[in-house]
Image (tube, rainbow, N blue to C red):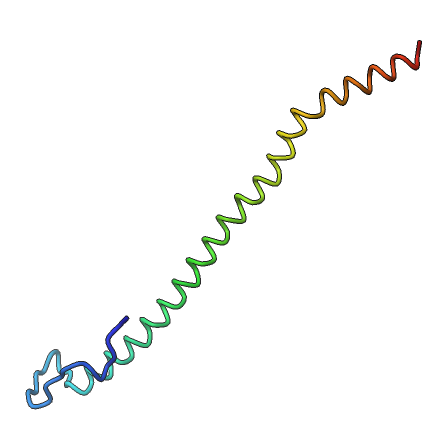
Length: 92
């Protein structure tokens, strides 16, 4: 979990001027960055979940297509042979 902004130790007695930015401005920028980072994390988790669901659904769809085809390959030829035998016996 990201640190909360209240836990940051910004020494206000030192007035470090980094590119003309004061400590208060840095603290505000850090707060904004944390908010943006949390939003990015939320969206990334949502995207990851969608990707996992998409992968699972791909395999489910593939199995729904392949399993009946394999079953038909093994079970239909004997049934068709029996039906053809009955049909030929009717024609005689």
